[in-house]
Length: 256
Image 1 (cartoon, one colour):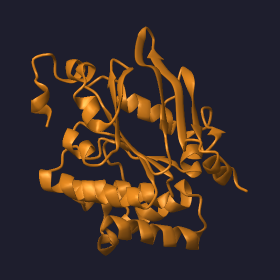
Image 2 (spheres, rainbow, N blue to C red):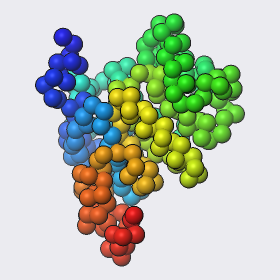
Image 3 (cartoon, rainbow, N blue to C red):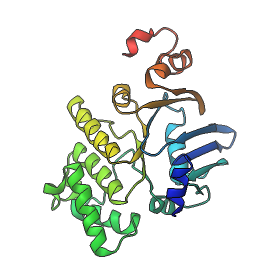
């Protein structure tokens, strides 16, 4: 029996974040944040600018070291492991600003992700890259140079590269930023398909309606503290969320 299967049978969470803290000198950016992510679950993270959202995601993904706390994934403590090791374990993060290899083709970008992030042999990496581009609708652009893609195309490529790594949990950092309403809808549909394939998701986003239509649970942060955690509607209608995100003068009805 594999560790993953054993953990699943015991009902353990896929990902467990416990007491994560990050300080820069006297400034505390994230303070004692804890939550669990179940296999296949989608969690949204909301909060005003400077709330600590991206820092939290970077600590989970391993690109920022925590001052305190632990990150456990599939029963394994990843707290001291590198971002690369976490990626190969199936905990994969996208960049807030897409950062493809701009002079390489779409296909080459996906292949590099599958080979290095997914630690696959050449043939297996080619199969994984093909599948990732097919799922994101970029297969017909596989010969295009990544730097020539539109913003939406680069967002799709960012997802393609993440999928090519073989994620069990996907960490999305404001991936809808800068897109039109129509493109946001396309992105929501794509993320729904990814979730339907069994990939768990943690999604940081300022576009509230994107999260409301995509996740089953919201976590709200303010000044690095977790101030709410629960069903999406309950969180955005909570007093703590309204004070942090909009101020007392904004009525709950305006959030719909």
